[in-house]
Length: 94
Image (cartoon, rainbow, N blue to C red; front, side, top):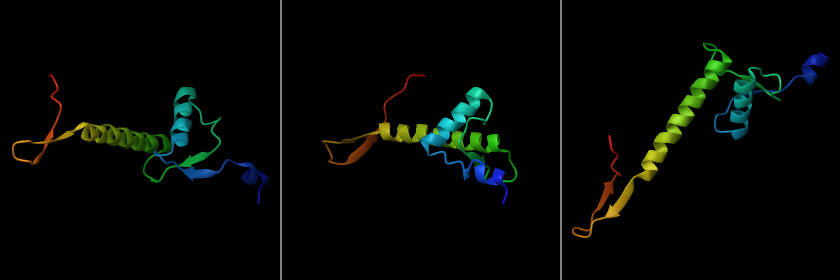
C-alpha cells in the first residue's frame, strides 16, 4: 500500500443535507479550488463531473426548501359558520 494512499483525504459522497458539505462547496466556489477541503467528494453518476453533480444537488435542495416553506405559510382557519376547515393562502400582489 502506498504512503500517498494512507495520507490522502477520505473520499465521501456529497450530502446536500449536511451543512458542513455545503460549507466545503461554498469555499470551493469562493476560492476556485478544492485544495483546502479536508475531504474528497465523489460524483454519484459517471455521466457528470463533480461540480455539475453538486450544482444539481444544491439546486434541488434550495428549490425544495423554498417550496416547502410556501406550504408552511399556508394558513388553516376554522370556519365558524359550518365548522369545516378551509385553507387560506396569503394574497400576493402582482
